[in-house]
Amino acid sequence: MDDLGATLLHLAAGDVSAAVDVGGIVIHDPIDDAVPPENSIVLGVGIREPADIARLMPELVARRSAALVLRAPVAVDGVVAEAVQTAGIPLIGLTPGASWTQLAAMLRTLLDEGQIGTAEPHTLSGIPAGDLFALANAVAALVDAPVTIEDRGARVLAFSGRQEESDRGRIETILGRQVPERYSRVLEERGVFRDLYRSDDPIQVAPVPIGETAFSQPRAAIAVRAGDEILGSIWAAVREPLSDDRKRALRDAAQVVALHLLRNRAGADVERRLQADLVASALEGGAEAQEAAHRLGLSGHSALVIAVAVGSDERSAVEDAARLATERQRVADAFAVHLSAVHPRSATAQIGNVIYGVLPAIREPAESEERAGKIAEDFLERLGDHLPVMIAVGPVAVDAAALVDSRASADRALRVVTTARPRSRRVVRLADVHAESLLLELRDLVAVRGDRPTGVIAKLIEYDHEHDARLVATLNAWLEAFGDVNQAADAVFVHPNTFRYRLRRLVQVSGIDLKDPADRFAAMLQLRVVCSTAEADVAKTGTRRVRGDE
Image 1 (cartoon, helix red, strand yellow):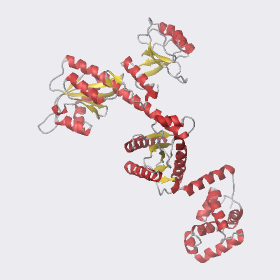
Image 2 (image 1 turned 45 degrees about the vertical axis):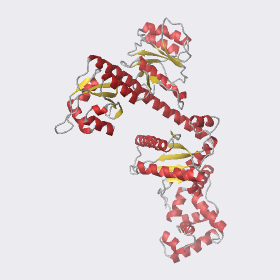
Image 3 (image 1 turned 90 degrees about the vertical axis):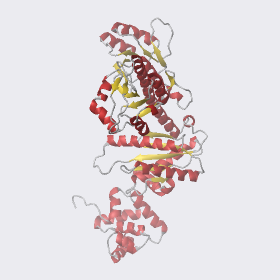
Image 4 (image 1 turned 180 degrees about the vertical axis):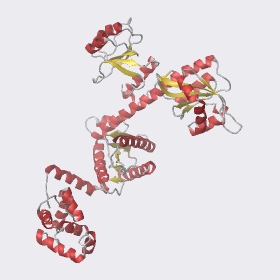
């Protein structure tokens, strides 16, 4: 229903939320005693009366059918509603105008998940499914004219041979894979698209100016539709109006083209979802990881994981979640195309808010990681910078089982680059930000355990709260400057002599030995990890938050 509901199907009665593995597609025949597979979707061709529907339900229950599909409008009265509820079998309506052949093909496409990655051919009306160019040539032979198959946006999806017999406008359309805007504007002004989408029959299109004195050849065009949805159109460059036989052939061809377009769309959606499931299984590890990697074509090959995060646009005060989700999907689609151009066995999927790519390694590990980083940088350059997109590259996994570790490393590096302010790098490896990643993990541990500053830092924080002495900021600046008093004094905007006085004072208050490396490391670690947000502000800015009663 999620895939075909907007085009072909609607729920007439019952519930489709129950999880049932569909066992097949069958057409109901009242005089046939053949037993269909369990959990089949039954196509009730010719069943319309409420009494017939109610009478059929117990039979479907006995055969453990999954659903019943009838031609809309479906007559659902009290008797039918009760029969559907008792049977627990949903009743689905097929949109008027859509053919049962289209529905059966689409449903079988959605059930073909196990076929992804195989070489088994599919044909529709004798033409390989999805081969629109072969279909365009077949249509051209039927109407004896060069044709194009276009989508709703006048983009050329496929074209036939013999285009040299057409005009300059057609050649320009083929080369640009898009009907030129000046032609589209003329057709729009003449109401051609309005007439085209309102009619089920081919329409004749008068010549369009393609120069000061030249005109295009006449066109015969027909809309390609599935039910009430317009999928596109077929355009034939003809020298004279089509005969009745060729008009009929073009009408039949439009139905076949609709079947191929729907099959392409549903098949692409199914393949994308299946690939996302396989990538998720491969990256999560466990018993199914090896099989998932095998179906992705990665079994027996080393590979690495690339993680992509799309941040919010900080120019807007309130993040628009819908816009961000749309942008994330756009980036995911672009990233999939980018990686597939690099390596045909690459695989991508969006898991949660992160886009993952699995890229086979074709060189030594270090070279493969460097190559992946360059691929990521090239992707960011092509993508632009209107949204902050960050990428992390995981290490090379020698087999499918190690993809889990590669993903974990990429996730750790991605977290560093997405939380950094400001973001100095957009493509990183864990080796580049290993220390920052460890600090983030330590902060997580401290937050879970509820640890508070202790020892030297606790004494200085308490003293600063009582005297506003800024000793924590003084110590932090001195540590950051590696003991350079002048540089540290500049960082906190005081005179070096004042800074030296504060430095001596903090030693007296806390008892820290600034010459001891262990003391210095312990102090720096607490300042980086253990201090709360308020205490971190004190350490970095030298100012404390004043309570309302002070």
